Image 1 (cartoon, rainbow, N blue to C red):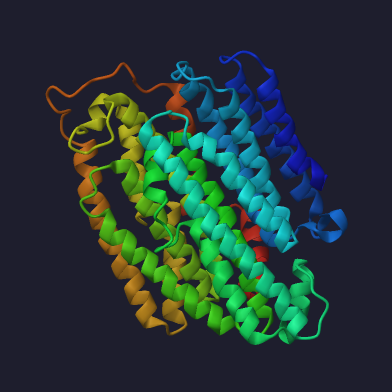
Image 2 (image 1 turned 45 degrees about the horizontal axis):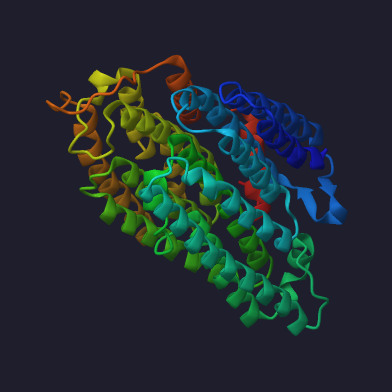
Length: 481
């Protein structure tokens, strides 16, 4: 069944190309998304406590960490797909054949990343996510979207090239130690104590920078403001909650190798520094940001920093980082999709032109405001729980400086985002501002409500199956919770 996880989205992509109707084609997205949810749920539930599901002679393997990320990405894609028919019905001026097909291609490649147990195959899958998602950025067919697409491709290609070089260094570290060279993950973990330390450290640095570029960690984040600012809301959502999560998984794979050897402290120090640095850069650029979609890009930079910071702190913070992966993705879905609705209602994404969103699009404006409180770690939403877990773990382990800086930067981000978002949703629409015919509807607001409901539930209660997946994944990284 591990092959079906990849093949089902690819078959749906072919169906999108074959179906001639632009009106009917978008409905294949929720149909295929639901089919993938059923398939992945069946595979994960069927595994239980049994042996991992494998394929390609061990190159494909679904381990606890992969189960968690694959399960989240599958559900996340399905929720995004519910938004697609309503959005594309408003965009009949654009053909959507390749748009729908590429969305399925992105899902297939994201799924491949989660089950790749060969670092070379994982590298290919990560590059494929870039190539499949690039045409989605250019959906609006204007100069700004073209510039954003090229920047996304060029900077992403530099990052993925560094990751390839790091993979070569990792293989050479085995040769240097007199071992047979391989990039199969479990063999690398098994032989990690014997690997050449200088080459392993060099490999980690290159791989961290390479996949960190795909995550959008500062200072490798420069593609994000343009890409997120010009992409359709559904595409920005998949970038911020999906593809960046795949890149984070790749970083975790490399970290597991270092931890199995003698370089865990080296890797952690880098991750703590880069996590805090990304948060600081995001806080600076988020203040007085006039383009609210670009502001969300800097918010993504911040939360990618939180993810690597949690892993770098170790212990219970790893559990918090994995939980935050889910909370951040769902909350980004609320923000990007509601921001897309507001952009459509005003015909502008510049804060000077957008005020009183709650009056013009009451549901989207309210969801955008709720998403702001959620993403900044306000209770009772899910990100509060995961961020509190990371902060408390840092304090409990005596890492008071990191904990203090973490909390301070969270406060600065709250103030910076609030200064942009509160005037945007409150007050009255500017006089003379161009009004469009777009208003809230079930098709464009319903999926956002579902995402916000999940974010709220995760702030109050973590379902036992998810708790079990989180514990297993954290144990594979750091030991039991």
